[in-house]
Figure 1 (cartoon, rainbow, N blue to C red):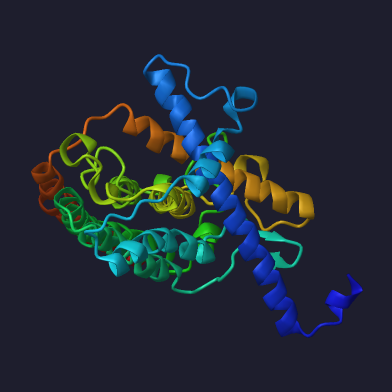
Figure 2 (figure 1 turned 45 degrees about the vertical axis):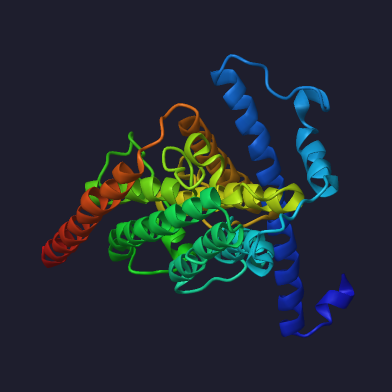
Length: 362
């Protein structure tokens, strides 16, 4: 590795960033593939079935079989579609989840390298800016298909995502008031250690979900908005198989349909990463002293493992809710967002500001 040390600092930084980007993308795609397998097995368990168990031991090669099928399946492009929008939509749906990988701090550091691709001081604003692009892909899919049910799915998705993006953004303002920063890495650092006002024999983590009733309420609002933003049950109205026969992706097949499928699961993984980062301490685990930046390579790897373990728990929760809860009606979905969640989020901001102002004066 002598040649690497002989390079100038800028070139070294570019090489390390490229390596981290490839590694993060590979892990995301691996998690997408095996989250699908976990969902199928959990669904089978809930419905008293076996689930996929033929491809490899315990069905572990099923994702590889699904990928081969998607790549080699005959692709049909209906004659009535608007081809430019039809072809563009699947790529736009997949892109936001990949771009949001850049600001997720999935560990403390490995050696001298921080485990984040871009430590932006406005990281969460970047996330919201990129997340808002996802709706364009779904709307374009509905419009480009030039068909009734996809168009209805696209319209539903546009209204739903715009509505719940507002709630999602407002729900995080109390977090920024507590932390005083928009950097995701600094938010994780703020959550290191245990809650100071509790006795030593009750070492509750200093994670924001435990900080106060206001931050717990922010977590609940953000979680509900995350379900809506990722089109997961009980907010999967844009797809709604019983009503729209699959919604915006009904005219797609082969790899294009797979991109929509992958985009939804990738968005769910990124939402889980944000929940862990913002409310559950990211890579920190104070009970074992793993809440400070890594001093060795092994501790750096442990931090990444802790982060991924927390993300996996949230993914299981997303999957469990899908197969246990019924779908909302569309009017209930919109009323919940505008008439319930939005006023609660605004009130939470006001209460948090008053509380912090009073505490600073005392």
